[in-house]
Length: 279
Image 1 (spheres, one colour):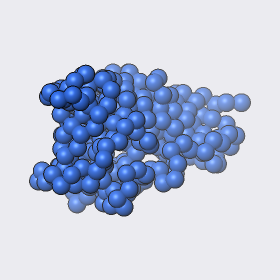
Image 2 (cartoon, one colour):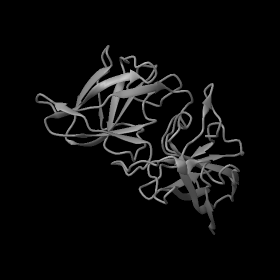
Image 3 (cartoon, rainbow, N blue to C red):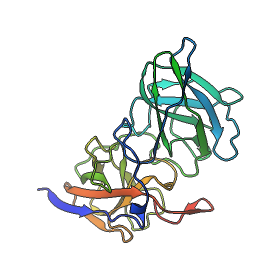
């Protein structure tokens, strides 16, 4: 017999004072930016630009630019297209068919073009950048990157192992719209200033998620857009119970259903690499 529980995450302090943003090609409403600059492709159709360090603007060589057709994968895993390593001036050019794409840059300390990111690697995904590619034109997309400070949720696999115990629910933004391509996260204690013990499946187009758990117990829930690092200002983020996390009691062999977590733009601040609010 399934137990039903309808809960709603309280919005973070002053969250409604920040704009939620526009809906991008992947259906995500949040910290996105559309780049519209086009130049003559001189016979080429695709994307070009420069990868630079966010602090100082120094060009970053040997970075890879990944192109995704939408954000439903949370810009994780294999991309549809990947560039050659950027040159000494951080420049890249990648031919792709006309269409709408998300563009991200990554440089791993290992030098590998793919795989999970680790602290010290560079990445650009805290702001989802999209562009439209037109036949005979090159879309100019410059990508500022920052070093990762905290490890990813996932080490070996993207999809959690299925069990008969867990939590199902929905991720919504402040206006009640689904937030696809995001994660619910679960902790065994109310201390949420650390990596979670468990992570949900990616939320689908309706915002639905499932957290598979290995055993019964009380769990504290949050929700994130990104699977890496600490939340940044403007990133959609939520906690069940708001400032006072509310535990969810899970029984072995059952799923708690219809748990709703509301995400709002994160308003926390950082000091010495640590968030003043949990993640």
